[in-house]
Image (tube, rainbow, N blue to C red):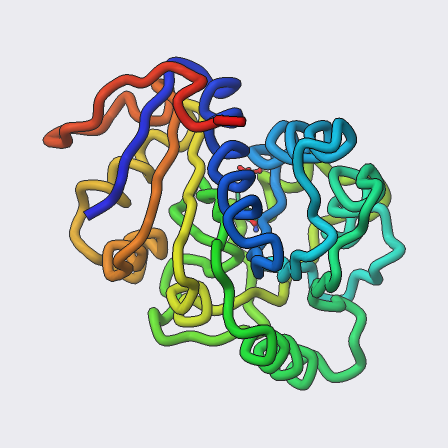
Length: 258
Ligand code: GLP
């Protein structure tokens, strides 16, 4: 059973999502956060670092683990998720997090890189709040359709539709890599709590399957139904195809409280 919150537009959904992250860090300043990239997250990070710059919140005690990274792409490359995170969040903060973990796409031994990453999560005490976006094909992290629900952090082949989608965002690479490193579905499900954020009409089909469809490895997001503490925030455009649910339309600011 999801805790489902639907807002009239993406801006309000993003504010509400930021509010949940802020609440988590205020409640537990040394929280371990699982972080996502993608378009959905840009405004959310904007809200978070602006609050930090205004001294409303500090991320100095948190440890972060990012969901995924392109394989073969060095952290310095402008298209890496390392660069995305620096640009969108870490560089903007006055107080840097205690620890930042992002899979290194250019690690000489990717399988070892994945094992070290998993060990890092365990040694940190486990993820308190895992933030997730949803791919148009229902992926979470880069767990593409068909990913086993017991998968751990690993190398994965990207689907053609994912590669096509990311093509238009490239800054430096000539094409989207064929593979990536991603936190596994089992790794994601071990988080204490999960926040899934879904905005935009292009995700309406996948979102409906995640909320109403049967659990199906071809829609990796459906794995979340097996977790006890999932909050789902969506805008009306993403939620337009939902049926048989009892979500109310909410108005920001329900979630941000100072
Ligand atoms: C991507 C990323 C995820 C992200 C999701 C949504 O492929 N691997 O980390 O959360 O899919 O992306 P976007 O917000 O750009 O739609």
